[in-house]
Structure formats: C-alpha cells, structure tokens
Amino acid sequence: MSHDASGFDDMDDAEKVKFSQEESAATLARLDKLLADLDGLRATVEDPDGYISFALGFDGRLLDLKIADAVGYVMTNLELEARLNRLIAAGEDGVDQMRAELF
Image 1 (cartoon, helix red, strand yellow):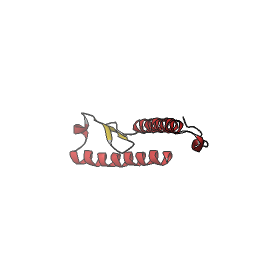
Image 2 (spheres, one colour; image 1 turned 90 degrees about the vertical axis):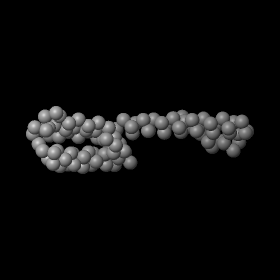
Image 3 (cartoon, one colour; image 1 turned 60 degrees about the vertical axis):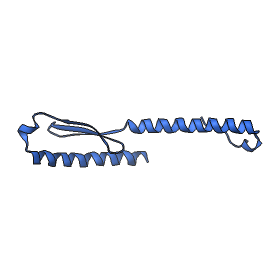
Image 4 (spheres, one colour; image 1 turned 180 degrees about the vertical axis):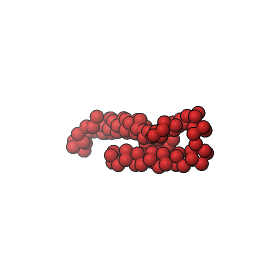
C-alpha cells in the first residue's frame, strides 16, 4: 500500500516517521511477494522417452531429478550423460525464457 508523499514536507516528525514505517513495510511486503512468486517458478524438462525428468528453479538450481530404474537397461552411462547434458541445456534455455518474460 503506497501513500501519497506530496505532503511529506508538511508533516510533523511523528507523522513522517509513521509514513516512512508504513512505506517501508509496504515495500517489504511487495518484495516478499515477488520473491515468493519467483521461488514458485519452475522449468520442467522431460526426456521424450520418459526415462529422465527434472525441474530447475528460476535461479537455475536443480530442484528435482528423476531417473527411471530401467535407464540402465536401455542406455550406457555415456548415453545417459549425453542425454542429461542435452536436457540440462534445454532446461537452462527454459530458465532464460522465464527470466526474459518477467524482465
């Protein structure tokens, strides 16, 4: 909640303090909401074959990773690494797109 500051200079000291405290509290509340909204954003990536899925947060942190037990039967470690690298690159692109849409 933002107040009109046009009459700030005409306020007495107690009113200025109260006004400043209310403005600070309102600003912090808006920042808390923005941070909570950002924390809720996710870029989710899933392997087309369904063996791997993960989610990256707005800041690029890995939030969730799932690798199917069957992956060891259908690909080698090197194939798994290559697939993970491709998916991570796609996830990072998704994070970049989220950031671009917000800013």
